[in-house]
Image 1 (tube, rainbow, N blue to C red):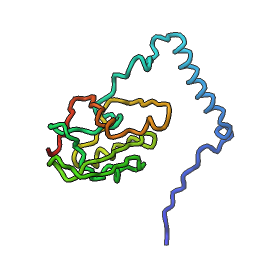
Image 2 (cartoon, one colour; image 1 turned 90 degrees about the horizontal axis):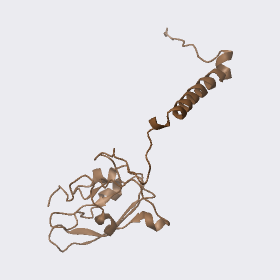
Image 3 (cartoon, rainbow, N blue to C red; image 1 turned 135 degrees about the horizontal axis):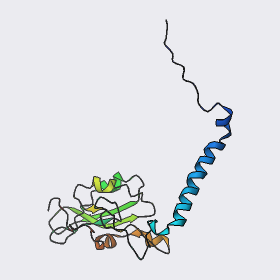
Image 4 (cartoon, helix red, strand yellow; image 1 turned 60 degrees about the vertical axis):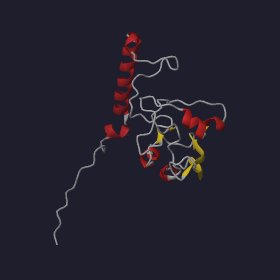
Length: 174
């Protein structure tokens, strides 16, 4: 029983490689090169005076703050199916369902909360929603507050958020 074994030499065994000094020197050399270039021509540095100047490169695929959509008749599109809460890896969506009496579906959310401090903004809730009721297209990328309760968004706050890229109503079944 003969096996062909290929022996690969291990790199970094020389004294020069073990010292790491040449690699550190190369890194410091690159850093100082950038530093001196930026000091000589500070107008070429691309900066953004945030929050006075907002970013202009946010595309419609950007996952910003959540929002709930409305139907064409301005009723809430969510049917409280709990698919978004089930798909959420961080368990930050809390829904309580109630009976619906507007003739569209049998359920609607009585309460709908998203804890944005727990949210990882992965977008799984948007992908899981069969009604296109939840979206992350508000264009809001910074959320500030003074206490934890400011970061827990209620159903009313989510319905008040508008889409930054056009379409306001859901495109799924009506």
